Image (cartoon, rainbow, N blue to C red; front, side, top):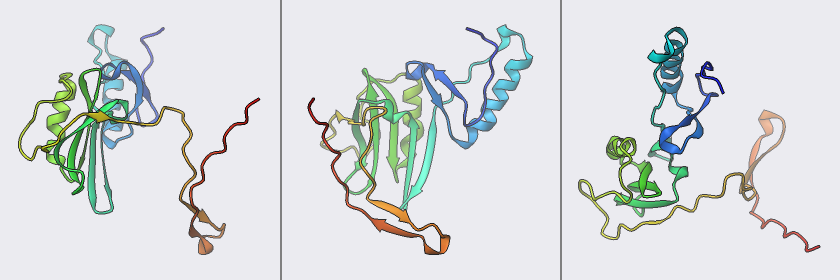
Length: 185
């Protein structure tokens, strides 16, 4: 083991203390800048002056007129609870937990709660979290997160692109088929 390896950028992976030292690659715009600053500092200073790089993963996307934001690592969770808003109305905050603490949050058109949950993740806040603010669902209950196992194959896509010439490309619907069962030996 060595303490003299420095990494930065989207392809860099490093263990994160808040997520049981799982290796994370943080593919967000701030990672390239902040990671490079820490790596450069750590390269030129004495070992006793080195700083850890422990940013909280944070992402956002706009999909079908919805603003989707995440903080922490929701896919690391094994439970979730809707804490604000309504999934039925597609405007909500959901918090993910693992081993009794908050490890991630997702918001759909409800981003005002993201920083609050980020602070809870950094402090290893309890899961499920206490009710915060307003618009708390009356039936807020913890349910299994049900993420597929890492490395598990997924079903075939519903839509595929066809044609090799860019002028002839089309999207074609292909109904999903169940994977074939293995034969008993």
